[in-house]
Image (cartoon, rainbow, N blue to C red):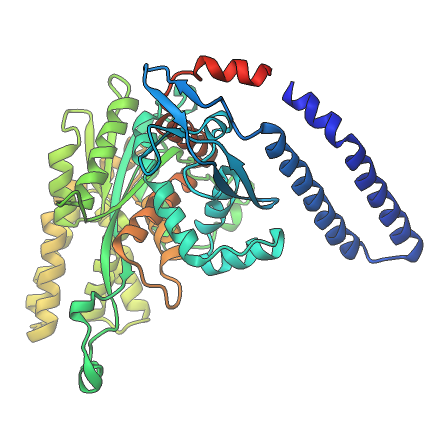
Length: 509
């Protein structure tokens, strides 16, 4: 009935508007107006038409006057108070409209706003659609850029502060959404379940207490940075199919060897694609007076997703970079059974071998490249322990001293302490992934591409909100998240199961 009334009330105005558009288009065609000029003018006029229609929709929706008193569905008696105007910022512009409100008496909490409940309006002034579009732009662009885009496209003038607050408010719904997600479609999953995590620094605003005060204290000492970074933990769970490879194939790929001229007819084997990637990201922060460790949060979410997705008998691969705290939390949170395999990212082995090579050969030399190639081949053949022993022997034979000896000891210690995760001959045979490209890419995309731009500094609440929203966006869950948060917010704002009986009677009148 409302939709029919809306059409009836606006049919004449719509015809006039469309007639004007038709005349404008015809005139532009006769005069040879540039297409981009017509495109912009038409878009502005369509927005203006939308503003007229949306304003009429609000007017036809009424003030929500349900009489001088009403009884709510929980039996509470309320009376009509002084009307309150409601401001709503939409993609069509800013609107203000009157509504009746109900409560026990003036100055007390408003108990019921029929119009707000009926239209399912948001808590703040910004419409759900504009929140969605604004924050979808905000997860990719700086908030200042988003404000400029919204002004250019819709003629709106949101402040950066409004967008930042909107980001934090929207992110509050993220944990509940992630907890409610079902398992991915089993038919779209790969053979192996993989869990991987890493830490990435976020540039933070220096606390006021640590900022030097006064002209003399404002000068930083040598090596002192204007800001500091706080580590964000990122985790990912995904599935992938097996791909058996040989050590020789991996070394050729790492060194980007040219293909054998006699083998051009063979198809190049592409690595299997990671399926159903789910990312999480968290900073260590204070919540309700207690410190919440970001790494704990991420591992807990990864463990829950593994429990949701892991099929009976499925192999679980844990890929990591050798950081001790990550391995400790892996042992604390993730499964440890005969079908779990821990693997050290090969791309964290290669830099150590290059570092060792430069202790014995000039950087950039053929000798250094041959040194790494030979030892990488041995590592991939399952001889990592022998490689470490050989490096130590070379250090003794070459009589390395001081800093060079210390560097060799450090890199050998790293490799030796991770030998239990360097059985690459077995990993290649069984077709397991041995590099953390997925999580490395996430660190770059989720954090660096948005949060490490020139001049950017974050406070913990804003940074955590951005991490939450970018992870959801990267997962491809943005539309599902918006639907979920609107549903949950509507239930929170309007918990009453139904309108009082007076509502139906008043609407009929």
